[in-house]
Image (tube, rainbow, N blue to C red):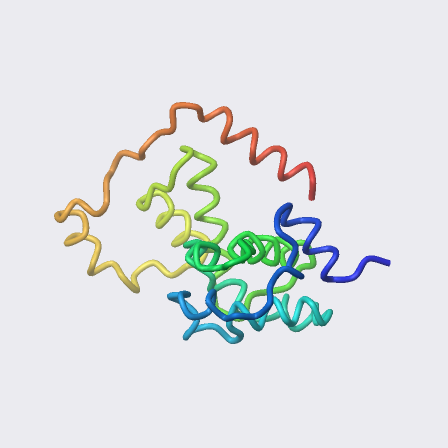
Length: 176
């Protein structure tokens, strides 16, 4: 039977997590580490120790920003951002709910926006999220100033090769 470590390593398709020697440079550079239940280094240690339930039930996997600061700081190029993506997908496949309210709905709205246009369109993503979460008015007061400052656009940016983006989504859907 496959261990949790082997399962994660197989799905990240990169440097195996055993390459981590726990220097904690990933955690030192992570802008979200102070908000996480377990820091990135601790998550790797938990995976190495087979603590699947604890990892997949943690808020940490949902709070990772995927900014990739961790991999740029890692002396062994362990791709923690990719690892967090894999862990989120595993949690979804196992039907595990995120501890933070609506975080999965935001995740789905984000991916839906990328699937639609190949890039994130904040307005479309926000509408999708608001409809899914039912949280219609909590931040409506900031939208006009963001729009006036050019932070929100009505028209979504488009990717030239949208077919390739959609193919990526199809391939990942067929694997799960």
